[in-house]
Amino acid sequence: MLAALAEAADALPDWAESLAPEDRLDGDLALDESEFAALDALLRERFGADLGALRAGLGLDGLAALTVGDLAELVRR
Image 1 (cartoon, one colour):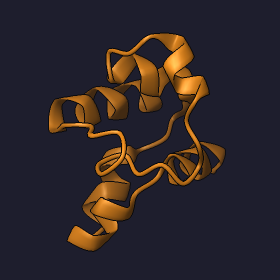
Image 2 (tube, helix red, strand yellow; image 1 turned 180 degrees about the vertical axis):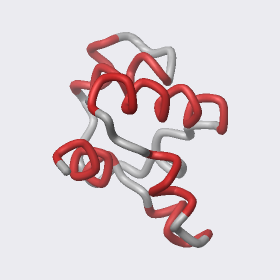
Image 3 (cartoon, helix red, strand yellow; image 1 turned 120 degrees about the vertical axis):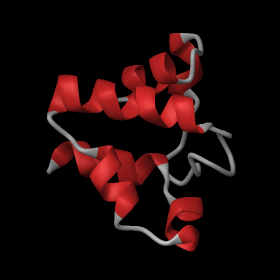
């Protein structure tokens, strides 16, 4: 999952190794909508996880609070 996050963010693979579960995708990592779309596609392809559906069910506060740990939980489902 971290490799998919690094790929979507167009970052070096070792960047993902420094991430913590509490890092927020929007606030801390500053992912933009195109990076979220790329991440959604990668998570669907590799894990069958639907990030778009998760995000669609969240309000603004939930979107701002979405973390690396939340992604890990989504992939585990």
